[in-house]
View (cartoon, rainbow, N blue to C red):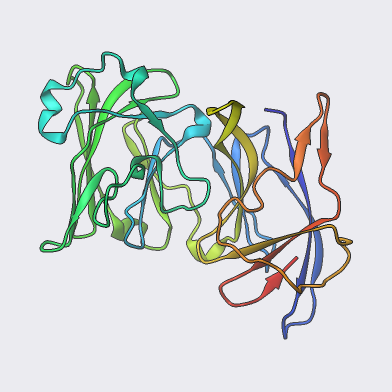
Length: 298
């Protein structure tokens, strides 16, 4: 992946606040850091991009669990249930389905794919009696160093996640608890399986609008064939909407006929294309970002 330094131009429009225009830049340091950007004040805290392997969602009802796919972490759905933990066998795992995080929603991580009903969250099922989510699936996780482990999210109960991981043969087993109260001001709590420790890396939810990052996206390689490829791009925070406008002079502030979406990669990565030596950029394209307070930025 080629190094990118993002050049930015923002304009606050459609607000009772006097228009603010600013030029800025974001440097991801050769794709080693995520940069979280807040439009109102231009703050841009950074976080080590590779210091985590999985992340567990704090707020909401989707109990999303992400993987750090751009780092090289891979996740495979196994045919084993949690009751078969001791008998888990990784033979032939390359034929199992590989899952990645959704590129559309923070609330659909790699552990939350292939849902079978309203109570199914992928890694477990919601219990209406206890209001807990009980794990029912074992996954195989391949870390960036190519070490292989089995992992299951045991439960989310009383705002506490419990998950277990071990070597495939059951050795080096770790049982981890993550309390939502420890991450109550953030979207996710992060954990490094590689280092067996929780990681505090994400700014408070209220302190960022965009994150300049890298993520996996399916790239077609032939009829019905895809490869999960890491791309450098921009994601939006929860509670934010984006509209893409093409074919109109970017200096125009016209917001008529915009189509708004909460797709977290609507800005994404397709505003650029690698031409072999550098990047070509989409012309006559502007993005409009509407924040939770209804302020709108171009």
